Structures are given as structure tokens and as C-alpha cells.
Length: 42
Image (cartoon, rainbow, N blue to C red):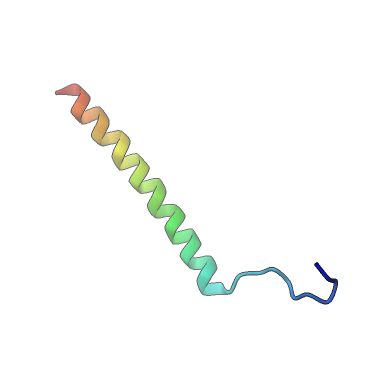
């Protein structure tokens, strides 16, 4: 990597999408755990 290379900063919309996907994956994981508990209780 050269000193003249531009900063490795993703554009604003890409960062927003990464945050949204991270939130979505956390919600999905919580929903899966909740579903496992509900199925286990029956």
C-alpha cells in the first residue's frame, strides 16, 4: 500500500447499509433463539 493511496473509507451509503445489515442479523439471531425456546417449551 502506497502512501499516495486514498483513505480506505467506505462511502456513507455503504456504511449505512453495513449498520443496517448488522442490526438485521442481530434481530434475526434473537428471533431464532426465541423460536428455539418456544419450540423447546412445547
